[in-house]
Length: 355
Image 1: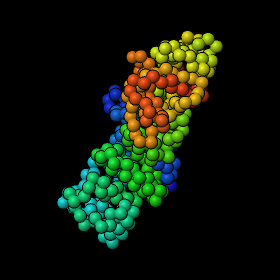
Image 2 (image 1 turned 90 degrees about the vertical axis):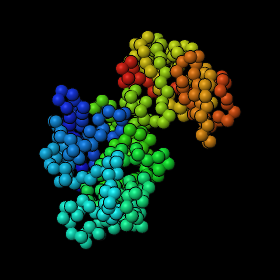
Image 3 (image 1 turned 135 degrees about the vertical axis):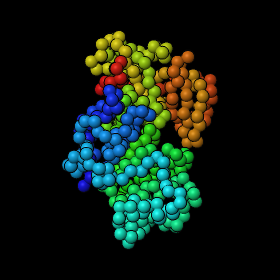
Image 4 (image 1 turned 30 degrees about the vertical axis):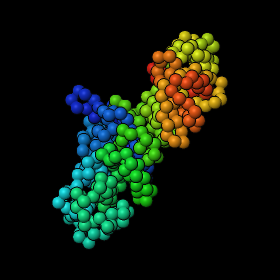
């Protein structure tokens, strides 16, 4: 068992509150990702769970036991940091077993645990090398192995891939996903990269300004965001946002910045003339649909099997359109970007989702 709960957890530095009442349930074996922009409090929250930051108020429980005042070493948690922090004078074997040796674990058990972790992470041939002889990805695997040998209830990862190049990040994402499947252990992972969050998580916790904006599975957040911030943060390329005015009857929205185009979108409980924002994902544009926007292509991003067209109406905001038929397009072309209004999301002037 490694069920973790946060109940109205807060963190303040003097009069400045950085974590503002977080409630969260994490089930045994879940892969949970904290995601959000820099400064949103995700790493601080992770460090509070680890015991590296004091909890100002609220309760942290693991398996029903309150952990607020429990020493970090006794919480059953192992943490992997952004920096590998390996001892340069020690071999891989010695680095992985150092914490166990320091804790007085018998030598035979250390060897067994290190061997087990090395087998899981495919580090066996590297055990007698020193960190300077390893690639960045291999060093990160050693850092993960150092956590595995402790047999923790919960793994904490604090942006572990941010120091790696793009290709290696993709490879290590696969490695970490494979590791979670093999160990079936609870993992809490912090990143600012929503692609990492979408590809790794069972459950994503989206944070902003020390507050949890929404919790859900990756596809739930993608398909059903609670507000404008979540809708814009989850998804790459990001969702298009079109400023609109509700027409009389609430069955249509006028887009002033797009030639006063009229979109047949029903807005419940909205006063005619009120401001709303229409959200359309790039892949929802196509050759059919009852809604249409007259745009001019500004630039094209060809990715082989698909193309992203960046287009605008006059001097307005860029709108991103995904198309499979982009080879025949060129900058300066006029297009009618069509979409099904049923795919549109509507947000009020405060950014709340109107359903």
